[in-house]
Image (tube, rainbow over all chains, first blue to last red; front, side):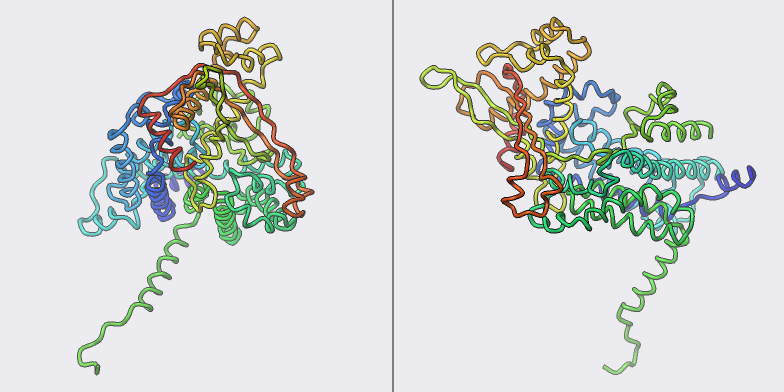
Length: 316
Length: 234
């Protein structure tokens, strides 16, 4: 048993395809989010957020994360653009470990500069980014992989067993964190009457902050079947998510259902980036075999769709 | 390996709702804050069921030399322009939404006499921050609580000053105060009525109005950023 566990841990890197997908989506989230918020960057995280300093000082973040909270004007803008750049590099998988580390450092520095902007999605993002720095998240579907294909494998700084162990332990930490998010959230929900009576989802969907489309979609939100369905689906999916992960068929269905739930939350409650972060980290749970099959399917469809080259001598 | 095992256990204990085991190991899991803070309530146990807004009002001397007040400025409504009817909301859409809860919590923890110190400061002569802290302690507020409360009063006042100076650049403002407006949503039982019936069934909004504070303007760059945001989203 112990021998088998040690073998699993040190023998090879697991979930490399899932981690690559997570890396791409998280890089996209960092870069696109900052690009979308460019017009309001100074009020959100820059000079216009300095009124929060008294509260920020009491949060206990280390001073080396003060890049954004201590810079303004053009210096802030350059650091902001650098964060977008490293997010893109991470998404593309160029110098993956270095670009992941720089994205982590810059993103967390930005996050801590305004204590009233963060969300659960940001918390997950910073934890997963940190763990991901110890993984081989650029193993597939990355520019690093292409370069490796041309130049060949470069010998690592540490022995393979150590690199594999770090990768696999970091992957375990990520998966454990994902499971704890769902499980803890379900346990909190079970303590409330409105989650148990199937009406909880109705309330935030009536507020200005968490219902950007309530004026258009009110008939939907007034339906007790829709509200009860969404409420119980959320509780049951989160509560049994770890169990669903144990068997391939239920894992597949659970991932589809929870991705749908996140998309619904993102679109209807206006918290799309939180949803995208959760979708991104859930992708680690899809097995490498499934990702390889998906890749083969996409490549097959692409080859079938691509117009065939005309062979010489073919009549016009 | 052992470090990972300990961390996994710590995350598990800190993430789940408080229980006898998490209470007993609180000191051992304290290292998780702030980087690995485990707060996954996600609209639980009780989902948000009210609109919360932060409003600001300024005091000034009018042309006849009399004390006057501006209209209330609903700053949360300005921020919500980044949320309403947008597929991808702007991150600044929830700033005051997240400020309101801790701001209220610090005042709610006070007794009636202490609360009077916070809310009763006069328009003509608002206290300095040092004086407000001293008055709170004199009223029996523990030092840590008083410091925490003044910290939040100060950030709200600084934002309010920046906002009012943006909105009323020609007025000679003398003081500022904030109000937290709360209005519960339409009750679940009334969800199927017409728009008029739902509006009638919705509980009225209540305002919790703070005391007057001295103007606490931010830097020129801060005020310019708040002014630009106000111009783009009001």
